[in-house]
Image (cartoon, rainbow, N blue to C red; front, side, top):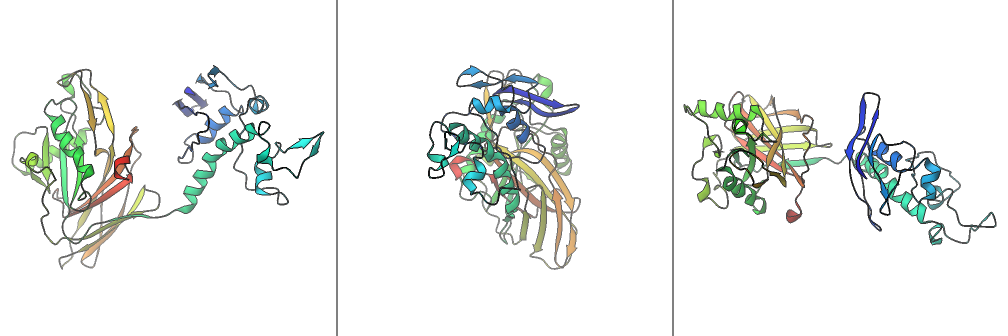
Length: 376
């Protein structure tokens, strides 16, 4: 399938979807309700015609006229059906209409799956059935994901960078190497804010956001500095100029801060609790960033023109929320806003706590949501 599109009135269900399925492969489509999984499967199985794009079957252009035509070509859709035939087996329910028969009579002595050539369409149908089944399974499990700091302060490393800055790639390479560190998420939490103030040079950084530039300016104002620059590192709320001398990341501070815990059952709404190491209540804010790695760009203008740049720990979504006092600590929640599209091979969450209205972090935690292959 290439650049397949489908709309229902003003609602765009599929926007230039492309993917290949080879012989003997098993694929699963997993996404939220309304993501377009069923629509895509219905186009493949002949229920809906595509509005645009191309489909090839066995290397030849192909568009099913209807479900019967698709079935004859070996593409069958098995729907997520809760009402089954109770007197039939699981195999018979799944492969209705593909039972082995002879002279019009069912051959019950022969397993459906033993019928090789005749049941190739049915086997393809099983592949198309998997997305709905897998999504239902993932949603049903509803298992909570939890990240928790130790009692000692976990350092927060902020890199302010831009694809429009020729001095930034070495800093990003340094940050990317932290993926392999056993101290990652335990002793430090890294993140890269892409700023937009270099876009005027002719290259618009796809990961930049004005609010990230404003955050760096807020730090500069706090430090009574008249300028901001890239690459710029901030360690625990303070300007960090000798980052390149710490190949393995910053040393642990040893400061007793308290335990920060975040958990979620859907990776969108997160519950937060903080047990402070200090007595006496205080007002706190929680800050959270969805991070992506494995990103890259072929820069065509500006200082990095002609270069292929790679990025990790890139901030895609950034939110903050006030917490409610609870004894010596605090509790609350935050919700990650809609994710920016990213063809990322690894996603992570970074969370840190600050005194209300302040930039300096007291404690941080985080971890992988979807881990890079080298970390598995």
